[in-house]
Image 1 (cartoon, rainbow, N blue to C red):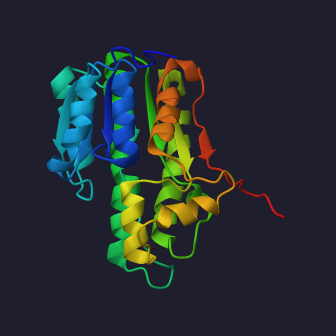
Image 2: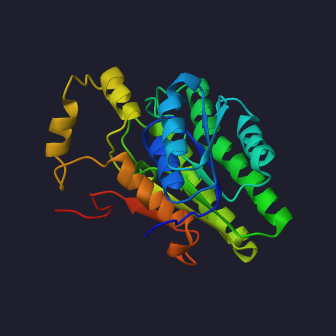
Length: 260
């Protein structure tokens, strides 16, 4: 499958690295006209921006801190200002700092709710506004988490925010199905990303090479990779995914509800 996103304008939050970065590059590879990426650190963005342009798309870096209210809406507005429209949105930015139900502070919970729920919520809203104003179809994919089903005890604020995003995905998809705006989500399992490496080292005593031991314990003998997740996201953004909307797909090698 080639040119799945031909001439599309695509916005990817969290697009400076990891799953978001891989998705931005994949969108360019599949024919997008313009790809905007959102992140806090412009210096991290250059390799992704270079790859986007190498594939023939126009690239835009939007420096924004999505922990701050209003920044998600501004990111959509800047994308529209650059290209006159937005066709597809990927909400890939996320916060995964740890906390249990008993030790999570109000501040930590609010941070998770802002970045993992409020920012994608309002990015979706403003994208939908533009699509409806123009009377055009469009697509949105939210990167959620397999942990949204219940998750580990030390992920309480993360689970609460991602569970909310899963529900918001379905709600928005139902509300705008007759606008021909398809909205889906992916519940991502354990993936090998720079962000996950930082989390393992900061919170779980991860040492050099922790990925090898983690991969060996998985059913398929490896962790998920950003480029293959990006391919799944691009498929859902494209017309090749047909009429599918309101689906939150478990992208994982473990099966929720399966027991031995």
